[in-house]
Image 1 (tube, rainbow, N blue to C red):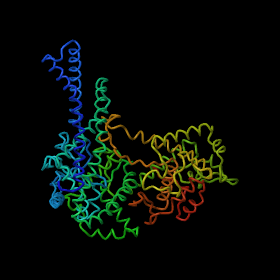
Image 2: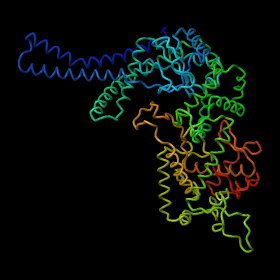
Image 3: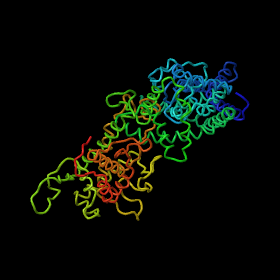
Image 4: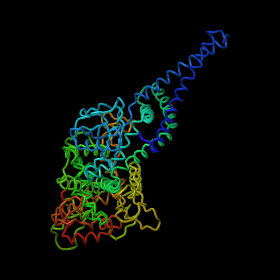
Length: 637
């Protein structure tokens, strides 16, 4: 294990954890010891009389009950299945070069080599103990492994205690081989402390307590078993609280010892590699929230997410002067070359990412199929825009908004026909523009209520929209990482569109009502399209396969943001159907509109001006500039 200061601290804390286990055992044996003393005293004639007889019976019964309870708790702690991170197993036959790199690294560090390697769709790496009997040997469809990159039966455990090395899949695609080795050095060095008997025993005890607490939380049993589970959970939580500080300090000591041991391996390169870790994390988060999430919502899962990280970070290097030097690394050998079939592994990790972050099925099907990046604009962006546009017009129909009249329809002289009674045509952008633009430029709330009926109905729909936002945990535009309010203001407005500051101008009441109804419609569709997983229980532990997604990526969009997205989608549909614009994919911002092959970057503020202020002049001028005709019907999804 070495003489690192952190290792000594870790071992001392591990002994403290084991002492807690010993104290619990001593407390469980205390009534039995008292019963033995009383029985021995009675047999030797020292403790005689009616009182001692009653005491012997009572203490003996108490000792049996305590021993039985302690045995049950110990059995649950020993047999409960500890939590395991969902990963993609990498067989040695599927990545011999990667296994060789890790073993060479372990030899340089003078520590045991990991027993196996697995990938996770996250920007992190760690060692995971899977020596519990319930964890091995893994099956292809087990809860902790996802088949696809090689069957779990090919994994070889070279030692009984060596943990599994879990590597973040974005690292393999973005990092170079030398950078990956430098990043993995302190992680692999952690196998040394893991092999120390006291630390290994303390970790098994803590993980068993954690698993026992999770197992006792299952309430789907008869009343008697529920009472027993409550008792087991109370005892396990009590011991877990006693171990908490010591276990935390033990892990800090292990990490310090591993970092100290790894200092001699590629120290200078590791400083540069840490910069790539932060960059990869930013690109991965952006790719999931801006690019992958729209596809997942459409029932498609991008099958090359890791390759998409490289494209996203390369695009960032092109745009950002601070990242110019990162692109020069691309000429070196990427770490994904250490895999025999990078495409197969990328597809497996992409499917796992969809399951973890969105809750998609485990296998492809008619409603859950992979999509390549070349097909993304047509299969995802175009469908998303037309689906949103169709939903927007359905809500307008529900509100009783008349369709825009056909301007080409002939009429005899005299005043122009009333658009509210003229013959209507198909769905048009003009209908949306006319509805969101008040006739007098500014419309009062009272006039808006009169236009749509009873004001109480408006208040009811507003309350229902606010309940919808609260139920989905909406926090405003600034509530999730990487998202900025397009207007440049903090998210200080409630879902119904009411300002959080008294000095803020009153919002467009038509936009507020339309946004509320859109929020209710989206919530209804999401609830109908997300049936509970088969066999899933409400109290299933969060690491159970049936409780996916573990980390949902539902951006907390307000109703006004939904309206902005839908109006933008309608504008894009009109552009595609009238001037031949095409849908595109921006690696950093997601779906984008291309006009003559050039990305449109000035649409968002014009749509916001319409939605928030009821001012359609900037958007209409933009439409005229590009030759887009809002009165022409568009094709909906």
